[in-house]
Image 1 (cartoon, helix red, strand yellow):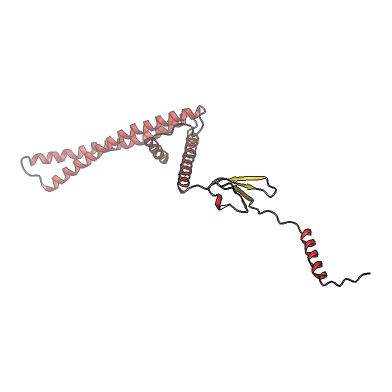
Image 2: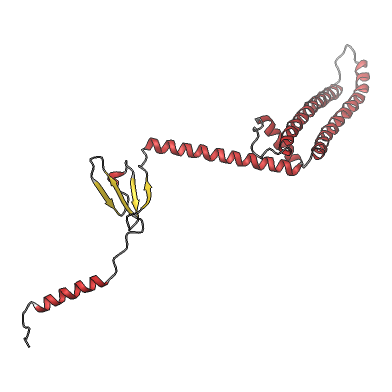
Length: 236
């Protein structure tokens, strides 16, 4: 039996043990973010465990640890391209929001008015409110005319002379009140026309929805009709 006494033996044993340990240990997995690979403009192939700065303007392939394709990273956008993309995204978001609002409005309209009879009842109620207000103004005008008669009689006594300040104030006040009520009546007549036009437009839309048109698929009402609809819905 030979005796090993070489001074290199401990060092060789140590290296062999380290190699055996390394072989026994599992290999470290590829980065969870994938392996980034690209080819530069001059044809150089680059790989990294993170996005490659030198390939920002080029497409980068993201690979799994086994070399299969996980995804493709598109080229980075220029400031102008990024601004245009953000503008397009804002526009698309606004369009989606408007479409969702239209769908919600149409659905609410159909829930409020399941049939034409329900819609007619709402129209009659809205018109009745305006008509009552008009009648109240007309009655007030009659009362003011009745109040004006004795004032006119008294003013006849001062014909050709200056009216006493109190009488003049009473006549001026009566004139102002009468004019205000006449203006109210005129506004109420305009309101009757507006309310009827609103319900006409609303009924035309409802008929299409009742016939099967998808909520949100119809042409949007004009701004005036939309504002009137909001006002009417608040009153209801």
